[in-house]
Image (cartoon, rainbow, N blue to C red; front, side, top):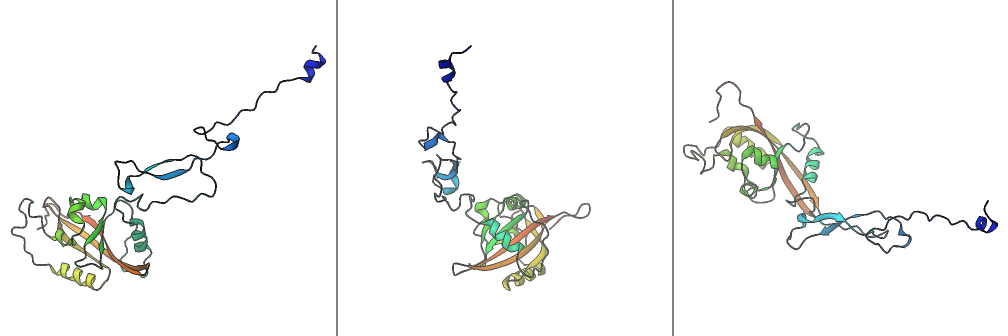
Length: 230
């Protein structure tokens, strides 16, 4: 039997303490939610797209969010915005159907001379065999002829445009949606039939007129045994 003194004194077990995060000095030793932060950029990385994602020490409530433009775009081009405008354009003339990340497409700046390519998708590289630095800044007409350094090059290939190419060009100059199957050439000189759909999109941003042509490409399979393109 316990004495009255022993009954009066009963040591209590300490309640378990929540672990501190990296010895955080915050009062209460309560686990704080770790918030993702940017932009830890190592000294040997100079481009914002190379920033590390990571976690910070607990951030007091109400702290402003940190934003780095271009963090999720190595090309610095907002393709989601472009494709969204294509999808939501009023009165579409061409039915594109579902579009996913397997599509081959380019974006052309219609406000600049000669309509240069300003963005090309990864699958455009795979379709044509050209590298990005060989595409951006050029007009897409370079696909109408095999490259000079490919086997056969451009020798024997007429520079005369086909009626389909001429009709395609007229639609583009009028800013109209257009679709046509054209013979194009890959980087290695191989010819292929390219189903091209072009959709113009326009809007104003901060008082500046934006106008792009988005061109989608599909490699049309050859039909018939032994069928070859010119």
